[in-house]
Structure formats: structure tokens, C-alpha cells
Length: 273
Image (cartoon, rainbow, N blue to C red; front, side, top):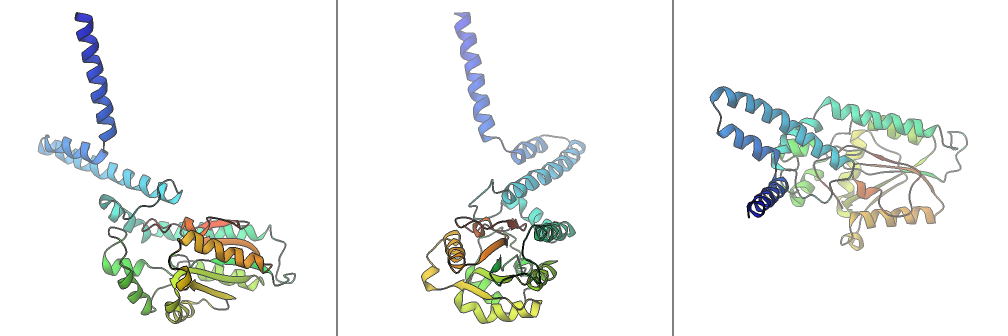
């Protein structure tokens, strides 16, 4: 009898632990601890909460970048300020610069040089948060992923033609162009934004691309990854060798044909499938 009671209690304790582990959240645990502590203990808990929240949010951001976290609609509310701090920091600029350095190193493995290109070597860039930064839009609207992107408001902002260049990208763009490599811009922006997009690109320092491809009516119902894959297929069918794709979203790389290299820029504000 005693053995049965003991086993029952042990099983109940185990099940409670399973439920607690499943529902466990670092923020809830720390907040609960703080609510039952003295003022001096609360100060320590507050400091611990701040430290652990930073780690939690940095872990979330990191897992977005390596594509472990996918298809999110909004940034977790407790991490919005963390994402904002990163995307407006010198660390973000340094991370972009490192990606740019890796692209330049990639050129060392290419057969194409300024004097030897046959006109069929190609490079693909995305536009938003690859060549042109949307950070000013998020600054003025206070979103930074905390709310779903309002397409109407965002397109109104695009029409203002005020997006600055992403740090270090103008230099890279012209480094590629001057090597004789054809640059193709493949964006999920709508075709009716072509004039605003062209003006903004030129104002930001980009020019001399071979083709700017935007989404027509026939593309609007497609997922971005399908749309961009189809455009790469079209380029290769023309005989182009796509040496690389640079973008801020994994959907820009998905599908076939695969480029020789892909270079991902950091962006945990939104996810585009």
C-alpha cells in the first residue's frame, strides 16, 4: 500500500514537472519571482530580468537570422526594443560590412575579371534592406516588427523616395558593376512602384543595373520564394551565370536554380515567405 502511494506521488510530481517545463517562460518566471520579493530583492530581480530578457531576445534574433525561426508575423513584444537597438546600432553596420567583405573575397574564386568577362556573368540584389534601408520608416512609425506591416502606409513611404542606402552597399554594388558583371535587381515591390524605386535607387547612389525586376499582376498571388526562383530560372535560361545573390530574406535564396553563393544581410524586423 505504502509503495503504491509513493509511486503515485512520484508520478504526479513527474507529470507536474513535464507540464511546468512545457509552459515555462523565462519572463513569467522572473516576473513571478519579483512579485514576491522585498524591495532590495526586487532590484536584483529587475537587473536579472533585464539581463535575461536581453539574452532571450538576442537568442530569438539569432535564430531568425539562421532560419530556425520562420513564418513569424510580428516580433515578440518584449523583444521589439531589442530588435530596434540592434538594427540601429554600429553592430548592425559592422555585420553588414563583414558580409560585404565576404562577397569581395568570393570574387577571388571567380573566373570573371574586368578584362575577361563575356557579358554573361550576373549578380542578383534584393532592394529593401539590402540596397535601400527601411529603418527610417520603422523609426517614424515606431514598429520595428511589433505590428504587422501596413502595406498601404509602407508603399506611401516608398513613393516619397527617401530610403537611404544600406551601409557599405553602394561601394559593393559598384565594385561588382566595375568588374563587368551584370547586375539584376529582383524585388518583391509592385510594378506600379517602378518610378519611385528607380528615383530612390539613383538618389541613394545606385545606377547602371542591367534589369530591375518588380512584381507584375501575374506574380502577386505567388509566394516571394516562388516568384524569385522563377526569375532566376529565366536568367539562367538566357545563358547567364549567376555568381551570387545578396538579400535580407531567406525567400530570396529558396528554390532552384541555386546560385553559386548566397549572402544574407541581417534583418529580424519582418519575415517574407
